[in-house]
Amino acid sequence: MPIRIVQLGSPRLPDEGLRLGTVRRPPRGVPKAEFATRDFYDVWQPLLSPSAELVAQAQVAADDKAWNAFKRKFKAEMNHPAASQLLDLLAALSHDTSLAVGCYCEEEARCHRSVLRELLEARGAKII
Image (cartoon, rainbow, N blue to C red; front, top):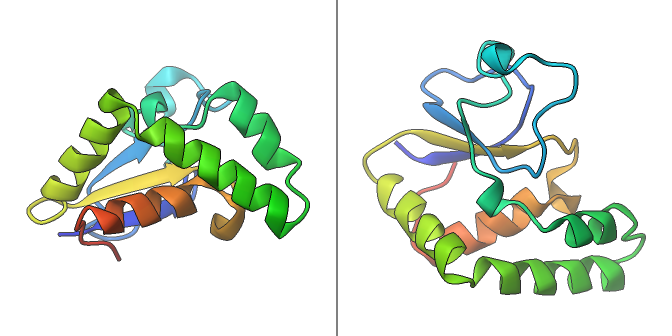
């Protein structure tokens, strides 16, 4: 019953479990009542999203140096107590509950969810 790292809005996989939206903003033009039925998320967790400043930095990170600077700053944000505690909880739940963590970005390698994967793995989470 591990955690899956997903692109929000993509079709759900069998046994995916609860889908968490780790994004700063809800999907545009989608009524709140349809977030889950349209495969965005069941629960919104903006605490696990980069700050607005870092989202902007990630969007213009054109090379590895810029991307690594974003990753370093995002990891620092995730070290704040509330975010760190939530990551600890998700890692613990991954051993007994199916969950999915996601963002809108198409490419995981250049998305904050790749950093969330690293942070969850470091906490001992079971991840597919």
